[in-house]
Amino acid sequence: MNVHDSEQMEALLMKEGFRITDTDKSADLIIVNTCSIREKAEQKVYSILGRYRGLKQARPGMIIGVGGCMAQQKGAELFARAPYIDFVFGTHNIHRLPEIVKDVERNRARRVETCFHDTVYSIGIVTPPHNGSVSSFVTIMQGCNNFCSFCVVPYLRGREESRELKDIVDEITILASHGVKEVTLLGQNVNSYGNTLHNGADFPSLLKKIGDIEGIERIRFTTSHPKDLSDGLIECFATVDKLCEHIHLPVQSGSDSVLKRMNRRYDADDYLRKVNKLREVCPYISISTDFIVGFPGESESDFQKTIDLMEEVRFDNAFSFKYSARPGTAAEKLDDRIPEPVKRERLTRVQELQQIHTVEKNHALKGMVEDILVVGLSKNSHTDVSGRTKTNRIVNFEGERELIGKTVCVSIHNTYIHSLRGKLFEKERNQKC
Image 1: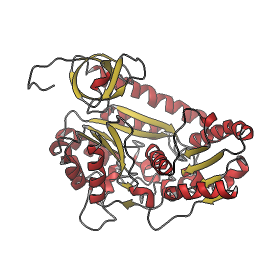
Image 2: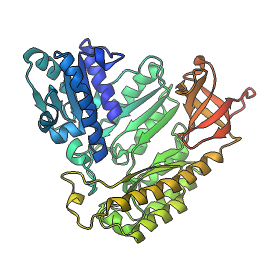
Image 3: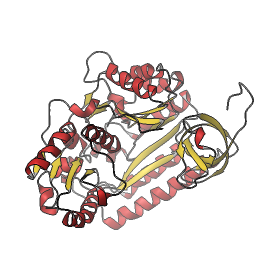
Image 4: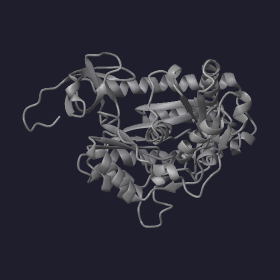
């Protein structure tokens, strides 16, 4: 979501005459958009700000602002760590960015804007696609009402708020008219989309509406909370042709006692039942997840249940992290902290097992022919283009720039842990991949 927030900031500032620079050394305005979901993310922010100290000393007229979740949490405290920054603005104040910048330019005085509003005014800011972009993010909701004990999001993003269905459809229709073929729907918990609208709209009905938009070929979304994964949404993987065969479904732990302390409001059996339903409806669906290891009170037996769940599900991919206490969350007050060496060892075990599963899943695609929406040039070779399978795997293959924006058949020749390697497949007329 931070990526899309940055796109919205860029769109607002470009309307005021600003342009993106090739290097920060030539910038008149630098904005650091921050994350606070884990301690490591905060450390990176302070490191980045430290690098900008020299730029500010060399060019005192440069304006530096800090936005996002860490700005929302720290507020004016950031001035103590980085006294050379000029303004701080929180998650509900993106829409005020042009006004804040003008005020700082005019008065050369620090400014802090971290208040919450009754509605998130920036939620509907439309970000025109960059030239040639065929894939775009679209925010459908913001905030969260779940209050998982480890998570700071409800305190920094505010309570859940859904956009009107018509506004979302209108935005995606505009994107399609600019050549966008693929949209990724964003929300802290997209499964609960519509709960605040009270008009019958829900996430499955939104997916069906987007599926009818001419020009849109693929629909993705993130992130889903398992407790809100409805049968109606599961059925969409069979009935909405444009919906990609991938879901990110964070489980966090395989232990029921840990899940209870996390306030996740499902148990391992609930999760497994939903995974089985997904695979019954869509046998080739790709399922990725998140794990937190070393949560307070996690015994070796609890951790083994996470390993057991991984072996049973065999996820296509996973993001795994050591637990770090976030200020203001319920878990911050929990006793029975896990020693850092134990957390590191458990994280290594999870990541090593997941690597085995990911390689196994990717290797099964060798020799297959896949539909690939080409989204751009490869990062690794100027003679290659790159795209994704409907199951969200990156595929690089030799091809001309003119293929960008087209869906082509690619035969998979080599598989790696983070990507696949293929070759353009010449199909006969009317033959499907």
